[in-house]
Length: 174
Image (cartoon, rainbow, N blue to C red; front, side, top):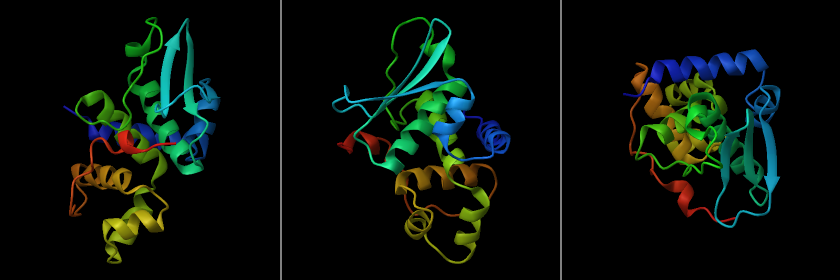
């Protein structure tokens, strides 16, 4: 069972503690090395934890916002799945594939890190639909759908016109 309240609370504590929604800055301040690489063909990012060193690898061909989304997702793995990546070499996680709890938790955490709840709620109350909220907040639509889905789980009175596409990152080419 997904702990929506816990993920929301932890993401907000992180944003408040570091005073930013920038996942790259947060990672660095938490002692996670951020490495940009051109070695990835189709992989957007990866998290690893070996020899007590944590690292996020990011494909250096991504645009700025995609880089932030992938970094926030990998930061979610650092927050919730460090033990899964421990001492076994590089553990590659399929980004935004929500067929398992591990990936969904990382996605929800990323959505809460990058998207301010109050701003999202204000736009929704002003009559914006999810597409226009995403555009106004400079967010990818599927990440916004995850955010709104999580807000609904937290008790906010919102409606989702569609479900997030579970494998939307798989179709992104850099």
